[in-house]
Length: 216
Image (cartoon, rainbow, N blue to C red; front, side):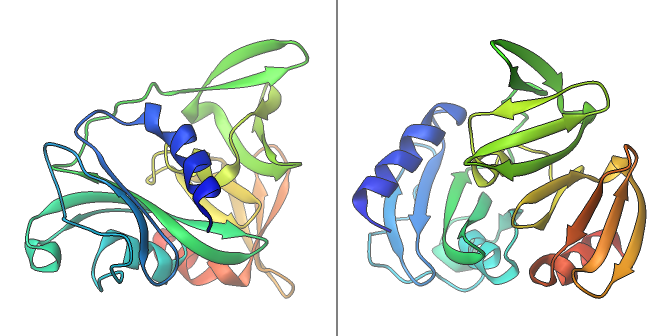
């Protein structure tokens, strides 16, 4: 990951978090960038290896967004971490981790704004059926509308509630409330039948996490 990519990532995410948030960006082995806050500072330096048990380590290990409390034995201070792996063409390249002194209250609205033709429409998160990567944008589908969001799927995943939304494929995030049926499928491990009739694959990469999250 080069400095330009890191700069682009920070330009996207910096306005989404409150001032007391530390941000760390890593590849799969070490930290590349760290911006501490006044409320919590893990003393990370670029080049430091990713510590086992940290939020970034867990996101990279499971290949999924992680929201978790981290005990003080990892960095010397406790923190609440929100970490998401950066995936390009099916390969994990690193992770972005937001570091809070405590579990944050919801700091974003419960809306996602999509563009349809030349207009924008705010959509409640709980109305979203699924999100799909399409041509470097994110296609957002609801029962009544469908349109595009400017952020890519991995960027948006940071801001979706993990108890409602789950990544099931490098190109899809689904709202669990809209899963009608889960079928076995030889090509993708599972096939999701959504309530609008859309059929969405669960790939091998995400299958074990998907099963563990839904308890089957």
